[in-house]
Image (cartoon, rainbow, N blue to C red; front, side, top):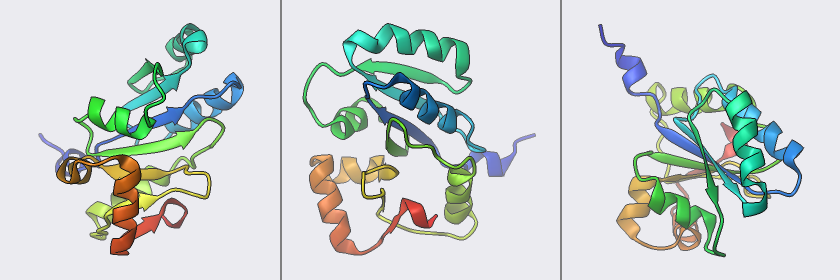
Length: 164
């Protein structure tokens, strides 16, 4: 028997920006792994010198599907991830050290699927944590993530991550 509600849950990946402090990174990974509605994939952007350490830690500690991507260019991580991982409807971006409350994405799912919340994007906090961009929106406008955020803010149909 198919659980229809399960079928319509939000399809998102969470991207975590690199840091020099591994403990901060691990706290953020753990808070995403503990979500009531976990991401379909955790994408950890790493500096090459920390890649193996992060992979080893994730093997031992993370239940959610995850991958580590080396950052080899100065390209905006948002653009790099939105182009590379097109199968996820939403991409959520966080800096290492930010801890996401365990019910945050479940609340977002309920707001979208049960309360019919419509938005063009979810804006992060003052440090950018919690920025959520829609893959279809990104593909439609074929622009940079930075320009897309500016354009979508003009629509006034966006909310803040802290308001969910």
